[in-house]
Length: 128
Image (tube, rainbow, N blue to C red; front, side, top):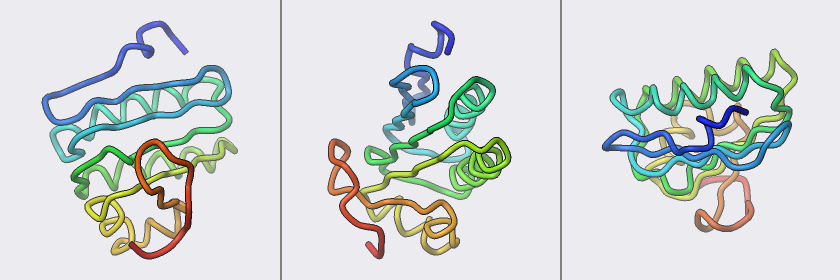
């Protein structure tokens, strides 16, 4: 991980912070992930997957909106993680994130986990 990735990436709609180092990292997005802001999330995930990460958690617990561009970023990161034998976890807490994942089938594909809020461990996997 480079020093620049320690600083949160941000647009007016979303901020993305990376915590952890080496093989275990967590990417936490806050705000709205749409066609304007999804590239910020994609850039962080790509940078981590270019490195030596082995376990990647994508925490969407603070995301208030997720559209098709954000779904594409998650699907692409998942495909890449599978190819690279990286364990990828996706955490979500709000209906605004869970429903699009469920409707598209990504909830099951990503093995997404529902959390009660952004600061807790997964409580269940299932319907919102």
